[in-house]
Image 1 (tube, one colour):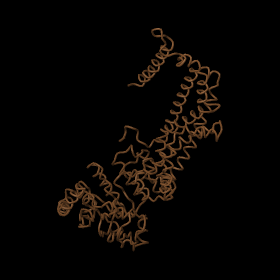
Image 2 (cartoon, one colour):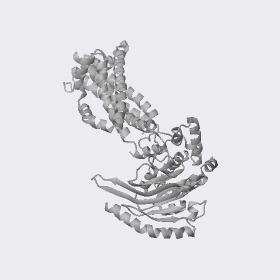
Image 3 (cartoon, chains in turn yellow, green):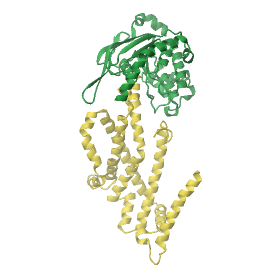
Image 4 (tube, one colour):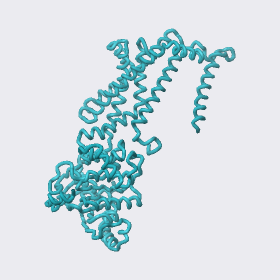
Length: 262
Length: 279
């Protein structure tokens, strides 16, 4: 399929979906609204709301807050995950001692932590950052741990025969291997950082996309809720594009999917 | 440089480069028992000598190489490298592995240079010498490729350059050309002989291919089937050098030797095969 044709088909899906949404929320079928506008709003109102947000510039502050929260959560969670992942992988005894607690903490649904974080860190950005960290940390931690553990024994033996000491092994073998695993989960961990921020905002805050959606919901402003969701979706896609380009640059040494055995 | 080394330390050449003295190799099994892979192996490789170990699959040839590399400690006996008993990693040896051992996150050039860089050679000099080695193995224009972009044969060439750039006194090779196709193996064999001819390192070469062993080596050592594999034969290959792998196989002396060794190897191969099948 050509690039142009693909894009056209993709746009067609959006047009048809919006068209159906518009039809059923605007025109009654046999005297009955299939999608009552009160619950489903309609595309025009939602578009109007979005345009209004951008025209008045209200949205920028909220986008900025959510972006800050997500980035801080991602950065701190990643650094923590890398450090602990390395530490556990190189110290199997420590890992064995902490193993049940790591599993326990990871099994906990993070949403229940949100009220506690709000109590501890207040309604500002840090309670959301904390929530994001608890999500990002475990993804990065497990991947780095795995990456260090799964270094090919042959590559390791080769490195040692080439005269590498412990520090050089760390730099030339363990670190690149762990990084490649971490980057393979980059999309997931960045996504979770945003989830942490938005869910945290939704549960109690004074700014951010989650706050916008929650506010609209509070006054039954369905158009506002949908508008918030669309802005959030566009925001996540934009971040994903950035992540993809970073990934491409950093992992040039890896075979492209389809190029080698899966 | 080779001359000064020879002149200042003439005593070294009288010692065997590798001396395995009554080496036992044993592994602890999951059920608590002990598997004795190799029993009482004694083998000398002189400086500048090319020795191949041939044996049936699973007889512990590779294990013996790991012992000589110091990656594995013998359960009994000891290994002397140029007269000094080996206690840890063998710093005088370069090791070419059977499996892919290149660093996938480094380019071909970086892979070759890394052994010098970690030893403290300035990066620019290490890279320049690596580029030189790349052209010696015929991959001069492939320096910026990553291993996954190269064929199996090309990766082996990089591996060879990676090991040889450090100029080890001993070269350990574990079925290095095993995964390659027949033509590539022949080309790689000739490349290896060319490089080896330049400075005649001591080589311990493990293979299951008797023809390859005879064509390359000064001596061919035969191991019995495991467990408790022993060294059961030791032949001197009196074929002239320099050799061409393809041509030497047409030499009547080659056939004579091949027939002689194969008589002994055949029964061991059948034994070894029966055991791996039965497992």
